[in-house]
Amino acid sequence: LAACGDDPLRYSEPVGINLKAKSADTTGGVVSDEKGITTESANPYGKFITDARAQLGGRDPSEVALEQLTLTLGAGSTGVTRLGEVFTGQVDVLFVMNDTNNTAMAGGGVIAATAAGGPVPLDAAFTSTTLGAADLAKVIGGNFKVVIRGPAGADFATKGADADLQLTLTFAAYE
Image (cartoon, rainbow, N blue to C red; front, side):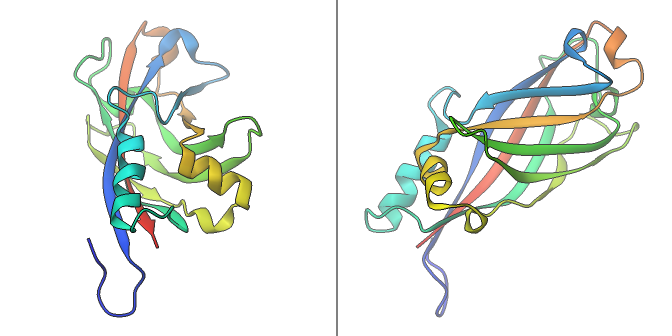
Protein backbone atom coordinates (compact mmCIF):
# COMPACT_ATOMS: atom_id res chain seq x y z
CA LEU A 1 0.00 0.00 0.00
CA ALA A 2 1.68 3.19 -1.11
CA ALA A 3 0.88 6.43 0.61
CA CYS A 4 -0.19 9.53 -1.27
CA GLY A 5 1.81 12.70 -1.87
CA ASP A 6 4.97 13.19 0.17
CA ASP A 7 4.06 10.65 2.87
CA PRO A 8 6.62 7.91 3.44
CA LEU A 9 5.89 4.49 1.98
CA ARG A 10 3.65 2.54 4.36
CA TYR A 11 2.61 -1.08 4.72
CA SER A 12 -0.12 -2.21 7.13
CA GLU A 13 -1.47 -5.61 8.18
CA PRO A 14 -3.50 -7.08 11.08
CA VAL A 15 -1.76 -9.57 13.37
CA GLY A 16 -3.71 -11.81 15.72
CA ILE A 17 -2.40 -13.18 19.00
CA ASN A 18 -4.25 -15.45 21.42
CA LEU A 19 -3.82 -15.04 25.15
CA LYS A 20 -5.42 -16.79 28.14
CA ALA A 21 -7.00 -15.52 31.33
CA LYS A 22 -7.58 -18.14 33.98
CA SER A 23 -9.52 -17.54 37.16
CA ALA A 24 -6.90 -19.50 39.09
CA ASP A 25 -4.13 -17.17 37.88
CA THR A 26 -5.81 -13.98 39.13
CA THR A 27 -3.38 -12.25 41.50
CA GLY A 28 -4.34 -9.32 43.71
CA GLY A 29 -7.50 -8.78 41.71
CA VAL A 30 -5.53 -8.48 38.44
CA VAL A 31 -5.86 -10.70 35.38
CA SER A 32 -2.80 -10.89 33.13
CA ASP A 33 -1.11 -13.01 30.50
CA GLU A 34 1.80 -12.64 28.11
CA LYS A 35 2.99 -14.32 24.96
CA GLY A 36 5.84 -13.88 22.49
CA ILE A 37 4.67 -12.03 19.37
CA THR A 38 6.20 -14.66 17.06
CA THR A 39 4.74 -17.73 18.79
CA GLU A 40 1.38 -17.88 17.01
CA SER A 41 0.85 -20.61 14.41
CA ALA A 42 2.28 -19.48 11.04
CA ASN A 43 3.87 -16.45 12.83
CA PRO A 44 1.62 -13.66 11.49
CA TYR A 45 3.92 -10.97 12.96
CA GLY A 46 6.91 -12.45 11.15
CA LYS A 47 4.84 -12.43 7.94
CA PHE A 48 3.97 -8.77 8.54
CA ILE A 49 7.68 -7.86 8.86
CA THR A 50 8.63 -9.97 5.80
CA ASP A 51 5.83 -8.40 3.73
CA ALA A 52 6.74 -4.91 4.97
CA ARG A 53 10.37 -5.41 3.93
CA ALA A 54 9.22 -6.55 0.48
CA GLN A 55 6.98 -3.49 0.16
CA LEU A 56 9.87 -1.25 1.31
CA GLY A 57 12.27 -2.57 -1.30
CA GLY A 58 14.00 -5.06 1.01
CA ARG A 59 14.81 -2.50 3.70
CA ASP A 60 13.85 -2.70 7.36
CA PRO A 61 11.13 -0.22 8.31
CA SER A 62 12.36 2.94 10.03
CA GLU A 63 9.21 2.95 12.17
CA VAL A 64 6.63 0.39 13.29
CA ALA A 65 3.37 1.70 14.73
CA LEU A 66 0.15 0.20 16.01
CA GLU A 67 -2.84 1.64 14.16
CA GLN A 68 -5.72 -0.42 15.60
CA LEU A 69 -6.21 -2.75 18.55
CA THR A 70 -9.23 -4.90 19.38
CA LEU A 71 -10.00 -7.47 22.06
CA THR A 72 -12.40 -10.38 21.57
CA LEU A 73 -13.47 -13.17 23.90
CA GLY A 74 -12.74 -16.41 22.05
CA ALA A 75 -15.41 -19.05 21.46
CA GLY A 76 -13.32 -21.66 23.31
CA SER A 77 -13.73 -19.82 26.62
CA THR A 78 -15.31 -21.69 29.52
CA GLY A 79 -17.09 -20.18 32.50
CA VAL A 80 -17.49 -16.73 30.91
CA THR A 81 -19.47 -15.40 27.95
CA ARG A 82 -18.58 -11.69 28.09
CA LEU A 83 -15.37 -9.67 28.34
CA GLY A 84 -17.00 -7.77 31.23
CA GLU A 85 -16.87 -10.99 33.25
CA VAL A 86 -13.10 -11.23 32.72
CA PHE A 87 -12.10 -7.57 33.07
CA THR A 88 -13.81 -4.57 34.61
CA GLY A 89 -11.91 -1.30 34.29
CA GLN A 90 -8.74 -0.14 32.58
CA VAL A 91 -7.09 -2.88 30.51
CA ASP A 92 -3.55 -2.27 29.25
CA VAL A 93 -1.69 -3.96 26.42
CA LEU A 94 2.08 -3.70 26.64
CA PHE A 95 5.07 -4.75 24.58
CA VAL A 96 7.92 -6.06 26.74
CA MET A 97 11.28 -6.42 24.99
CA ASN A 98 13.06 -9.75 25.35
CA ASP A 99 16.30 -9.68 27.36
CA THR A 100 15.97 -6.07 28.59
CA ASN A 101 12.35 -6.16 29.81
CA ASN A 102 11.99 -2.58 28.56
CA THR A 103 8.27 -1.88 28.31
CA ALA A 104 6.32 0.13 25.74
CA MET A 105 2.61 0.91 26.02
CA ALA A 106 0.81 -0.65 23.06
CA GLY A 107 -2.64 0.59 24.00
CA GLY A 108 -5.65 -0.07 26.15
CA GLY A 109 -9.07 1.03 27.21
CA VAL A 110 -11.85 0.60 29.70
CA ILE A 111 -13.83 -2.64 29.65
CA ALA A 112 -17.23 -2.12 31.24
CA ALA A 113 -18.76 -4.82 33.42
CA THR A 114 -21.52 -5.05 30.80
CA ALA A 115 -19.13 -5.48 27.83
CA ALA A 116 -20.13 -8.26 25.44
CA GLY A 117 -17.76 -10.71 23.77
CA GLY A 118 -16.36 -8.17 21.36
CA PRO A 119 -14.53 -7.27 19.36
CA VAL A 120 -14.05 -4.28 21.65
CA PRO A 121 -11.90 -1.51 20.17
CA LEU A 122 -9.05 -0.35 22.37
CA ASP A 123 -6.93 2.76 21.90
CA ALA A 124 -3.72 2.00 20.00
CA ALA A 125 -0.79 3.98 21.41
CA PHE A 126 2.45 2.36 20.18
CA THR A 127 5.01 3.86 17.88
CA SER A 128 8.62 2.75 17.71
CA THR A 129 9.79 6.37 17.40
CA THR A 130 9.90 6.50 21.22
CA LEU A 131 12.32 3.54 21.38
CA GLY A 132 16.08 3.44 21.28
CA ALA A 133 17.89 1.70 18.42
CA ALA A 134 18.31 -1.59 20.34
CA ASP A 135 14.61 -1.82 21.16
CA LEU A 136 13.63 -0.86 17.59
CA ALA A 137 15.76 -3.78 16.40
CA LYS A 138 13.90 -6.05 18.86
CA VAL A 139 10.53 -4.87 17.51
CA ILE A 140 11.61 -5.44 13.90
CA GLY A 141 13.05 -8.83 14.86
CA GLY A 142 9.91 -9.86 16.75
CA ASN A 143 11.85 -10.13 20.01
CA PHE A 144 9.13 -8.96 22.35
CA LYS A 145 6.16 -10.23 24.33
CA VAL A 146 2.59 -8.96 24.22
CA VAL A 147 1.16 -8.51 27.71
CA ILE A 148 -2.47 -7.89 28.65
CA ARG A 149 -3.46 -6.91 32.18
CA GLY A 150 -6.41 -5.39 33.94
CA PRO A 151 -8.67 -5.61 36.97
CA ALA A 152 -10.61 -8.85 37.23
CA GLY A 153 -14.34 -8.75 36.70
CA ALA A 154 -16.61 -9.40 39.66
CA ASP A 155 -16.26 -13.03 40.79
CA PHE A 156 -13.82 -13.88 37.96
CA ALA A 157 -11.19 -15.15 40.43
CA THR A 158 -13.65 -17.69 41.88
CA LYS A 159 -15.49 -18.76 38.68
CA GLY A 160 -13.07 -21.47 37.62
CA ALA A 161 -13.10 -19.85 34.18
CA ASP A 162 -10.67 -20.13 31.27
CA ALA A 163 -11.00 -17.15 28.95
CA ASP A 164 -9.49 -17.19 25.47
CA LEU A 165 -8.53 -13.60 24.67
CA GLN A 166 -7.90 -12.68 21.06
CA LEU A 167 -6.03 -9.46 20.39
CA THR A 168 -5.98 -8.14 16.84
CA LEU A 169 -3.16 -5.67 16.39
CA THR A 170 -3.02 -3.75 13.11
CA PHE A 171 0.61 -2.79 12.61
CA ALA A 172 2.01 -0.32 10.09
CA ALA A 173 5.59 -0.19 8.87
CA TYR A 174 7.03 3.02 7.45
CA GLU A 175 9.91 3.66 5.10
